[in-house]
Image (cartoon, helix red, strand yellow):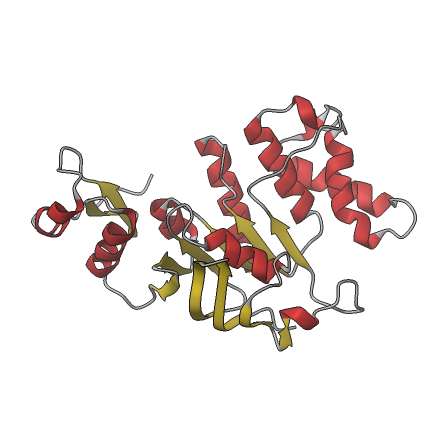
Length: 280
């Protein structure tokens, strides 16, 4: 089954406010593709379109060979898509088990089966969350809720997984756990498309990298490290220093530099640095 995503001439606007402008891009199957960009740049809007939550757009979005508008949920042998939105609220005190179990609803016509409950137990164990299973979801911290919602998506065993800021509200330990799990899913054949703010986490775990800039998507594949740094500086309006850690690229703010963007080009260029750290 082809899990690749092909976007052609995609545009979207809220009234006169252009969010996406003639976006053309392909995301390969069986990879962890990461989209970087600033808040409000259009990353989440693009995700909502791919997920089928936003339909008033121009252009086309193909998942495999099927246009997103023609994709029917529940069709036999259809591709399973999992989507984790960065915003979720509930006022009902469902238990953690029940919240995750709703992710299996598409596989249980009348009531959850033994296999459904076993799948929930396995995903809770994967993130060391078994001790929370009987707690009300509303009593959890923001980070715990984020993990529970991720478990709810993963228990569906999706072929294509869309993660919109999956490490929001998580401490460093859980950030690593979530992104390592995404990498494991890719090795098992899942195609993962992820929106992130942190370019360092992106380059530590991702396979393909893209940048939302000026209402368009820029493919960073094939660019040199300093070219990427310059693009990130222009996007985030912040002088950055290039580093290497365990043979992975890193980009950190240049402390003490003038924050005005008209100083970036000169100051950052003169401060190019490369640091090799020992792998722990």
